[in-house]
Length: 208
Image: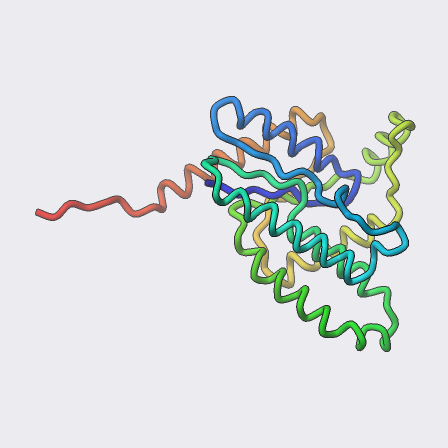
């Protein structure tokens, strides 16, 4: 089974791509998609940055992924990953003053430990990006579902900084064309990964 995550800032097209990739893979393989768990958060908007709320995100992400390990699947796709949840926590934590950070230091250490352990469980991590020009044009074309890009630039920098500092291997995917075109590129990356892994797997040898 391959566990594949789709990460990126709100509005990058992550959910649409995850659904399209699932649709393609499901034509020939047993595939399941863990949808964005942020919609399940029971906390009010003003509580979303609290430790309790952020811990809900990170623990629910792990639980939803873990449940799929007991299913007979070829692919488990995750719309967001532990990387997204960690970046969300960092975004909130970094806004605290020094006194508040000190008070939250044990919580921060806990979140960091969980993140560093779980990030190693993914086979493939796609980081979805979109150029500012394309992002703005899509907002104007779809005003009924206009995306709130507030803080997205800061959050994307956190993604890139975390990936660099933690030496996380990601497939950076620019979603500047149609969903279909980008999804096909991602399928190609999945196929290449599997082919490479198959070559590296040791062949069973038989005793003389």
